[in-house]
Image (cartoon, rainbow, N blue to C red; front, top):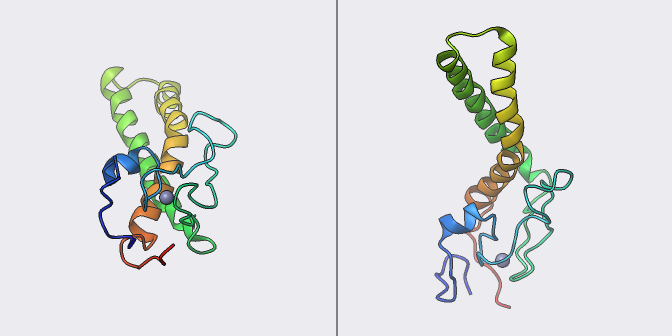
Length: 135
Ligand SMILES: [Zn+2]
């Protein structure tokens, strides 16, 4: 089956598969070895999809660019929670900013790192452009 064909057996849309961190080709296999709540291994990708065999590492160093996405989301969290602290506590002392900004920034880190890899693979991994060999 070609990668860009629509598989009638698929039970998820591409968007649902992205949110669930599923394989971009078959939308069934998990991309990551563990759940996002596994603090020590949340960012570890599987080498390939256990359902269709798609390789999650298209080339060495593929996911290095995903750090730009991680950085952008991190800055956005700092700005949003900085404004929340400013307006909620009426321009509080500096330590309040630290607490209000750093706690959400730390809490979203696993999802931020994981979704930056998911977006990289879905949009830059050549999933929709190239043909896959017949099995
Ligand atoms: Zn797959």
